[in-house]
Image (cartoon, rainbow, N blue to C red; front, top):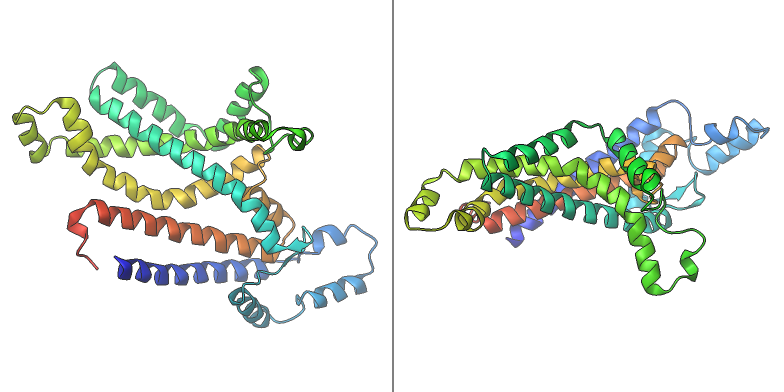
Length: 324
């Protein structure tokens, strides 16, 4: 298992390197530069702009910029954010915990909700409960993400004002609150973006889990257990679910990048100060190094999620334990 993980880590490092290289080349080959948006409208002398370009190395050839960037990254230096006027490490340290919190809660809610919904459907196959849950999942699956986010915002922040409209904390009162009150304040701000992300991916998990249960339940080992007198509930939870979980667990790897992509939009709508909001702002201001750093981090998430999924898959399926 250790050799398997090390091999996957080596493959993941290659994937992250390729992704970073492609993004670096694409954004540097695009017209314009990081100073265009906030200098062209000012009265700044073009000579000063040229000096700034030289100071940040933007006047050098593309291969030279790339080689210098690779060397700096290998040293642990991701560079300086021109748009935020801060070291990129500091920007990521501030934003990453918020995104991990949002993705962790959304991942837990979407997977647990999807698996429970599929179990309820399988236990009521062909009956009203099965069709009702399937209809709700299909409705959520067909709603565009921006419309779902706006609906959640309108219902729970405007028509029924239970939760804050945006942000991660109360910008005025948070620091004066007690520790339990600060925890509650952050939790209240987390509800709407986490609920939106969960509703986006809950129907996908539910549909895959239900399909997997429908494939497993007619199997011979389930029929044999049924013939021995095992109850339908035990067959579903103890025999069917263990095998049917495998394809859903494999989805954990692809859920990481999918959630990260969805988080970009959700964080923008709810002004959640995470990686998504940083990415949108960095793209708008053509902050080359910050965009590339976010892509490197996102690629690392994909690799880590894939390794976790494959490791769990091998641990749960004895047929895969001897595979290299």
